[in-house]
Amino acid sequence: MTDSDDLSARARRLELDDGELNSLHRTLESSLEARLAHRAGLEFDAGDAVRPGDDELARRIVARVVTSRTRPGRRRSHRAWGIAAAALCAGTAAAAIGPLTYLVRSLIGAHDAPPPPEPAIPAQAQSTSIPPIRDRDDELLAAPAKRTDPAPARPTAPTRSSETAANLFASANLARREGHPAQAISSYEELQHRYPDSAESRAADISLGMLLLDAGSAASALRHFERYLRAPSADLAPEALWGKSRALVRLGRGDDARAIWELIVNRYPDCAYAKAASAKLSVP
Amino acid sequence: MLRLAFRSPRSDPPAPPVRQHDELATLADAVQKGDVAALRTFVTAIVPDLIRVVRRVLGANHPDVEDTAYEAAHAVVEGLKAFRGESTFRYFACRVAVLTAMNVRRKESAQKRAAARDYSDPDALYENVADPEERAAAAALVPVVRALVATLPEPLAEALTLHVILGYTVAELAAASGAPLETVRSRLRLAKQALRKAVQGDARLREVFEVEP
Image (cartoon, rainbow over all chains, first blue to last red; front, side):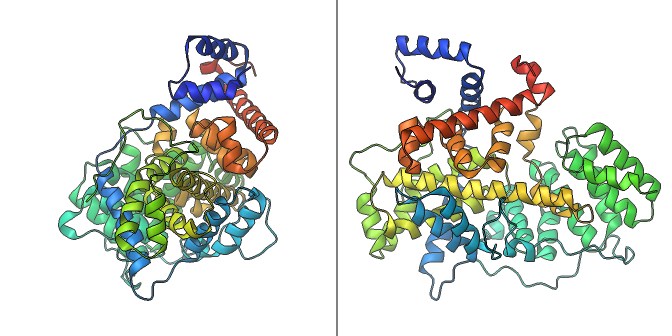
């Protein structure tokens, strides 16, 4: 008897004959778990689509790989080495998942071995995280943060003449992840200036809000969070609301912040910020 | 320049392991000998699959799709010297992409949980804002599966990813993980149980899929 999991996988490749299809349908009718897994698989298959810009995306990735492997004195990041280790282990049929996980984590920066039960936040990510909240007043209401950090060394940014909203968004995200907040802010702001109606511009409001908040520009941050929340499809509303509450606190508007926390707790009780918001509300 | 071979929409899942002539074998040999043109051609050939795999695991709108696909490509090339031909190169590349994307997903989940525990610093949450497509698809299983990939024990997460997300059969899953068939079946059974429990724990999904709590 053919394994029902195999029937599901082969059905997704349109490989089943009529008899096998009937067998699959009987299985799906009788097993909730099989039905859910098969349905989920079909959803993933339906989500595949070639998107505008995919060719350019692929070309960028190819160029990055070739550049990184051919330029003189090339230096690989810790993360690349860790992932390379994953590849080495993936190439051996006898590799076990546990040692692989530990090896990858240890190489990408979670140096505090032994392997934790949950993936640890790697040291590299910690060093590029948003700096602690500063208590100084908002001094930079409209001006972007000063550029004190060097630009990323990796030559991955597209040329100005070929930049699109997607490229600018990607560049800004890269700068943010690599710990260059000033450059990230600049890129996000350029994105919003040049492509104000793009989906990337809308998504950038939250990243910009958080970056500006940590740069001491609470009022500017608040404008970005509020603009995001005004958008018709504010899919990241909890994130924007949390950011807004932080901005309001920084601006001395504690009562308004409490209203936001209540909104988070009541409207988005399952979101990642609900617990934090509830804790804030418990403090008079 | 080779035409970048993206497949049409609703394409098949990434190539399963098939014991047959591997069209990338010659290129891979040349890459290991330092042939830059071969390197470009090899990476060009596998990148569409890597992007597709990463998008399935992280979400098409995830801000780290490009970086994750790049790291997977880099790792594939690095891993060529150790690859012993247990599968085709394309399949090997897809599995590297799965592991790379899973790692990103699991780190994000850990950061979110850490931020939720530490009320004084939930700022890290913004680094990992949920994929907009996931939040918009309120009644879909895709976000449920992606969440499980981030939280299940790794053997189960890999089984779930390779079977449900990428559509591998049990035999293909066993070949990928190097585990016996019965072990793979057991992992898959537990992963599907976790999926059922996740759906049963969500009132909205219970209603949509007509599931008893």
